[in-house]
Length: 285
Image 1 (cartoon, one colour):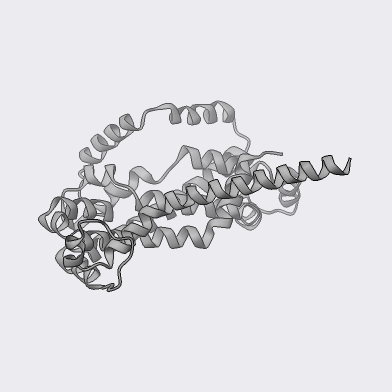
Image 2 (cartoon, rainbow, N blue to C red):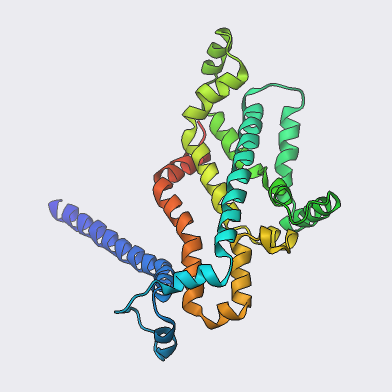
């Protein structure tokens, strides 16, 4: 009996060790492009072009590429535009999502279930059709090459409303009835009780939307042709298509590092809350 137990324990340890090895290999595969991007950004232009065989390290790192990335193209303006676009879009989306999710989760009105089903059916519409419709609408409103034109089509998300609604429904209804007996308004109950309880999911939605806005490419590329309103995604494409981006790869990589750093730091700072929010939104009861 003891021999069988030790044999089973050995198999579990071997399986766990194999799992860790496979995860380590996969982590290296995933992280290597980021390492190569950072490494290329600190290599001098001459050293990078002199490498017939790519080197996995450098003994003479330089920050000259970062200076060139900001001086050769208006990267600072692209960065500031993206920060403004991300903050405004995320704030408006969060307000719409919280209010809509609360209405579907707690308020009772005629046809609520039918409206919610129809609302969810919007997720079945191909995104290409939505882009075409939004483009026609924004063009007719004469909002091209403007921040309202960039922001308005992104202020709502059916998926985020659904995720937060499911999370709100996990809060016991007795709290709502007790609050109503005390004369608490729905808005006060929402922001004093529901939002604090569901804070991990709210934070998760906020971060995911911020990442989505920061990485947005198709819509900004379609609705703006004025460089004053370019976001970082458009800016990187502009750099790549220009002679500067094709010739000076280290400076191009430096620009990519600058643009990628905020998202990486944001995820690292809130990774535990993101995981908790997603897991809570995916379970009910």
